[in-house]
Amino acid sequence: MESPTRILLIDDDAVDRTSVRRALKKSGLAHDLTEAPDGTTGLRLAREGAFDCILLDYRLPDVDTFDLLASLLALPGEGHAVLMLTGEADEDLAFRLMRAGALDYLDKAEATPSSLARAIRYAEARRGFQIELDESRREAEAKSLELDTLNRQKTLLFSIIAHDLRNPFQALLGLSEVLGKAVASRDHASIERRAKGINDAATQAYSLLESLFSWASLQMDTMAVTITDVELGIVASEVIQGCAEAATDKGLTLTVACDGIKVRAQRDMLATVLRNLVNNAVKFTLPGGTITVTGWHDGDAVEISVTDTGVGMPPGKVDDLFRLDRRTTTNGTAGERGSGLGLLLCRDLVERQGSALTVESAVDKGTTFRFRLPAVDPSPRSLAVA
Image (cartoon, rainbow, N blue to C red; front, side):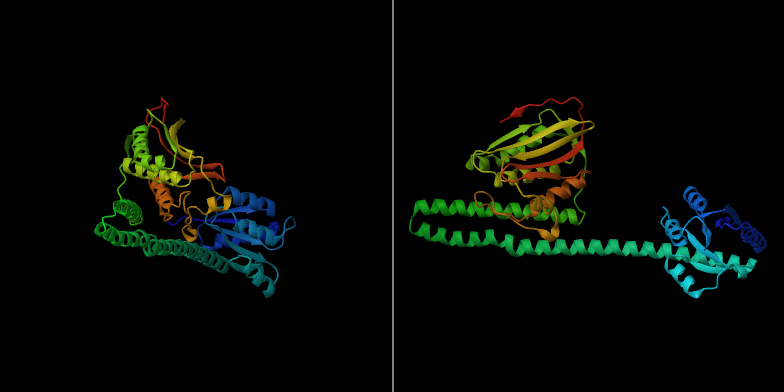
């Protein structure tokens, strides 16, 4: 059985309301009719109930018709099919009401049972079409945004391959050539320097390739996410140990303060995030500074932070830190080079685990990156280890 059309009639004239009521009854249109004697009551009823069609008188004593029409069309949900009723044969007025959002304009003198039912059906059909059109437009906009993001990602990858990945390989080629000459001349001091340079360039290239592969896997959705119970302190300590040599070379102190805390996470993803954040902190912290990985319980979650006492960033740079269209790279305090990909990778890895990466920074005061993960143990122990 067809559901009745829910109709709200807003008209201050009792005689006109009676005429509409009789016309609807004779039309054969299955309907439920609710009547409002003024615009204020009509708007209240429209807010409280769900109507398929609203029959709105053009002249109401208590409200401006165009204001009321706008309020009715702005109500939450899929909106209403609003059909104007008037005793005035004014084509210009009809045009203005239609432009304001009314779906039809009917002279009360011509509101016969058949014409009224036909107008209501047509208004409902047009409203349904508008809803479908709006949904299609939203889907198209979402697809356009997705394609735009993919294009930016493609541009970013090409930029990294063309520039950032070329540098370490150029260094490898140049240093290996010089190394060959040093070996031929038995210049041991030069051999040692060139060998270290080759190792540094290879390490940089490998690190960049690892980030590229991880990030590409995320974008192609081929990286599996298996959430397990993870000892945060153990993962953080392993990361600190891996970064210890670079930190020692710069005279930095690395600290872990999250022993005994367990979180629900993907272990490799968590380690990659912490490793990138700590490496980034090492890069931008001056000799004598400190870098701390901390975890503490906050309700059912654990808040994890990586804090440094480094050079910090101005607000404008913080705002653009995770934007693909404004990717910039800055050399570290000892001239370290980067691709700008590490933080984007961190953000995506954190989001894949159901969290969000945030950052606070101040120039010459340092930077803190934070994210939250579900807690496993509600009774943590905190121990700082240098």
